[in-house]
Length: 143
Length: 147
Image (cartoon, rainbow over all chains, first blue to last red; front, side, top):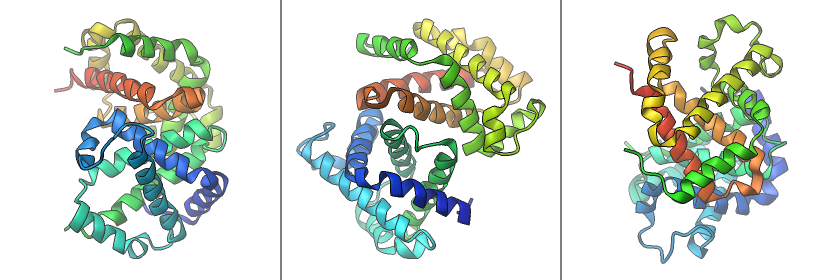
C-alpha cells in the first residue's frame, strides 16, 4: 500500500494546517498511548514519571513528532530518509514494531480532537497510509 | 469476567449520552469504508461506493451506521454481560455475514477517531483509554462465537 502522489499531496496539505501544533500533538499522543495502552509503559521505566502531561512525556512526545516532521520532508523515500532513526530503533531502542501502530492510532486520535474539520476521511486515509509506511521504514533495519 | 470501575461505567455512559448517533454512526462506517477500502467487500448490495463522496452520501451506508451504533448502545446498556448479549450477533457475523473478525478492529479504530472529533478536548487520555477498553470488549465478544 505505497503512497500515491495524491496521498503525498493530502499528507502535506494536512500537515501544513496542523504543523504549528506539532509539539502539543506529540505530547498528547504519547500521553494517550501510555494511558490507553499501559503495556507501552515498559519502555519508559527509566523516567521519573510516565503521567500524562509530565515533563518526560511532553519532551519525548515532541521528539517523536520531530521524527514525523522529518518523515514528511522525506516522503518520497522514507526508507532512505529514516535510515538513522531505523538503526536507532533496531539496535538501541528495540521497540517492538507492533507499538508503532498504537502510536500512529494515538497521533490520529490527537489530530481528530484538535482538528476535527481538517481530519476528513480523505485526509485520514492518506495519513493512515503515511504512518504505516513510516512504521515500515522505521522497522527496516530490525532484521 | 470484565471488571468495570465506577469511573469507567460513568465515562462510557457519558460518551453515549453526548454523541449524536445520527452523526457518529454513519461517519464511523463511511470512514471505515474509505480508509480501509477492502471492507467494502461486505457491502456489495449498497450501491455506489465508488469514491469517498459517494460513500459519504450513500443512504444505505448511513442507515447501517445507525444500526451499528445501536448495537454498541446495546453493549453499553449491558456492560456486565457484553459477551452473552452479543452471542447471537457474533454467530450472525460468523455464520451468515461471514465477516473476517480482523475487520472489527478497523471499524472500532475509526469509531475512536470519530468520537474523538465529536468530543474534542473532552476526549481526554483517560476517557480515550476507557473507550478503547470498551471497544476491545465489544470486539472480543463479537469474535467469541467464531470457530
